[in-house]
Amino acid sequence: MSLGNGRRQWTAALMLAGLVCGAAPLAAQDTSVKPGINDSFETPDVPQYVERFEKEGREVYDLRKEIIDACELRPGLRVADVGAGTGLFTRLLSERVGDEGKVFAVDISDEFVDHIRDFVEKEGLKNIEAVLCEPDAVNLEPESVDVVFICDTYHHFEFPYKTMSTIHRALKPGGIVVLVEFARIEGKSSEWIMGHVRAGQEVFEQEIAEVGFRKVGELEGIFKESYLVRFEKIDPSAEKE
Image (cartoon, rainbow, N blue to C red):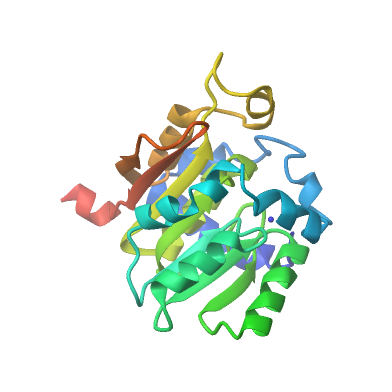
């Protein structure tokens, strides 16, 4: 996911998100929870990542149809693919929402964003827009999307509370987050997952809940090293009634 120059314009948005979703988690996010986790994305070799991400044997690639089905999309929806990378799921999401829908391919890496823009132009895809994001903000307009899809990316969020607060802000009322992540389980997960992913499912779910989401479902029985969870955006005003 590379840093743009829009940090100042997002300061007010983050402050508002803190008021809506709870200032305590945001206040605790002054430093990265995993420094250096995104160093490899500063100048990524895109063809190398295409080969790595879009190949048989990678669990989320092999189960891509089941994952997209679990998003429960329909034509006309507006979806953000946060951590779009090479655009594998961006293309699949684009097919599901159709010409009347839209997919925002969000990433922190200039190279990935340029790669997505290139194939969008080459293939004449009218319903995809590539968006360069910040390490703590997705840079999407308020209430602009129905679904946010995050695959193998949440563990790359250096400022998860801040980033998820901007996702909360970008979702329409009742909007959905679909999270696909590596299962980090002591004694079961691979050595790579244990060293690379900072926390397990329970911790990630708790962080997301603290920002203003409720868990509404989980896809079970198909993954060996991952999990898929669905969250719904909570309307703070409705919760007070």
